[in-house]
Length: 190
Ligand code: SF4
Image (tube, rainbow, N blue to C red; front, side, top):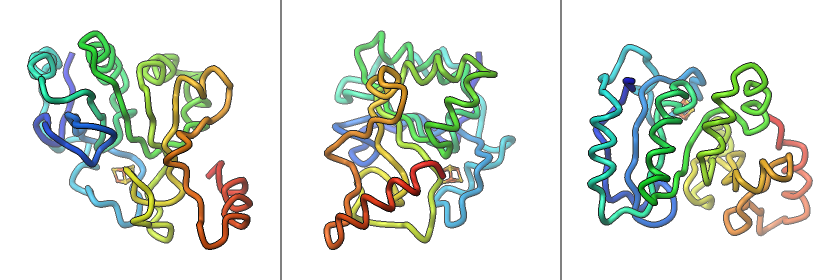
């Protein structure tokens, strides 16, 4: 099986999730978020194609990293390849984080027609979901670009049947926590 990537496997990242991580930069994204930092990753004919066995060899050789992050592009645009790689990462003892422009709720809807989406979600430990929204851009939220994006504990969410955010990364407006809570409720299903 092959995967289209925007860049070679990145090692030693400390900004794409907890700990020291490797990053798989997938190529291709349908969301077209205004203000996206990686517009060169949108084109489904861009980047380069690599056999996932090659990528597995590189993942197997990681020694500093404790986890792998799928980013892009949108990894959910190449679900089958990402699913196989995520399974492999877990087999290697690496945790899995993933960025997507879809909301968790939208992915669960899509999974009704495409079970491989649910299979991939089951192999993700932490999902950072939702489109980048320029008007909600913030430097106060860790590991993501805008306040609408959530850092989700996928296993707990699947068990509960609704989103469970990782508490320590949950966005709270310190100046107006009451208002933030209200907004969060209204904005959660973007
Ligand atoms: S989902 Fe990510 S890569 Fe895709 S357009 Fe939005 S910010 Fe850019």
